[in-house]
Image 1 (cartoon, protein in one colour):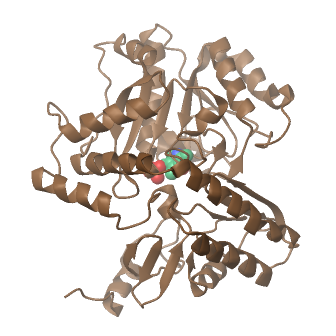
Image 2 (cartoon, helix red, strand yellow):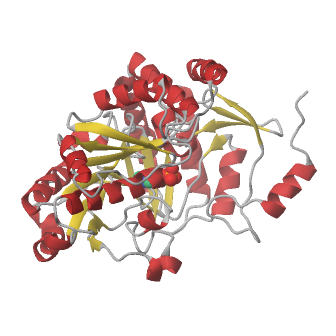
Image 3 (spheres, helix red, strand yellow):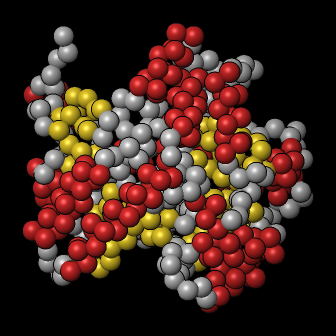
Length: 432
Ligand SMILES: *Cc1c(COP(=O)(O)O)cnc(C)c1O
């Protein structure tokens, strides 16, 4: 018989375990979860929450998905893990095949790693080693835009927004890279070349020391939930080519259909030199990420020293994770996910629009299966979290942002409960 989450467990959690982005001394509430299925998270106290977060972009098919359970169960009977140094296996190769197939054509080489942050570290190392291989060892800096988010490890932190990136304490030990203004041209805004002035100035002055531009394509996620013009990305690709700089796209949040395209860079009709994926890669089942590169990048890397790329996580290409990733991608491609995501976008636009009438709301926007209400003031996290839970929905606002990116399988009525809860809670707490 399964034990319930009793007071002892709860006490130990509070006394000993850090949760993300919280204080150990004065932590925000945590809600014990018993199970999750479809788009519902079952709390230990019997309450049910409709999931509006996909567990941070990952659980695109919802929870307890028969096809994904089967993949894990079948794989576990063969092996859960073997080292990838000197060994290989079918789950890794089959996953690589499908990833090379569905990502932009030029991306032909793949490095498996264990989390998104590590995928970003790997991408940065690849870019620097590429230029070293070409005899341009002076190209070691990165150029990025403000309001970006690329992870919490040191290399990734160095390209997060220096102000909103949650990392200001560490600024003196981070590598100093180049930051340009965030993309100021909204998704539907009319294009103007002036939006690139700062990037161009930085490239003009420093291209000899810049290895790559790194940015999130179309959607800036944790750095502000902003959507920018595909034309911006298209022009950045051209600038990279003009100035001999690689383009790294971080598709960790946007990949696997979230914006309505399989990968967000497709909206700009461009392809990066290096691309990071993670989050929804395994449908939210296990931690797995990958960094893909073009033939050209891989050839440059191989020209450097012994030609080896010196990175190798212990759990690289974990077979369980690869199996479930493969099953998740096959499942995604087996249903009309584009229609679903389009329908979610339309419903989010429609049902969140009334929030614009509230005094404290600055902007309401939706793109693909992402809906955002941006407020004028930061939310009171503890208070607003409880109000959402009381209404039976799971949302996790941060700063001035109340947002949802539900599993693609969510039903219309359930999504209406999420948007309804957002409207009601924001109305109750409305102030400027
Ligand atoms: C979440 C995220 C990361 C970091 O991934 P982790 O798996 O949390 O290390 C990097 N880049 C983007 C765009 C992300 O959304």
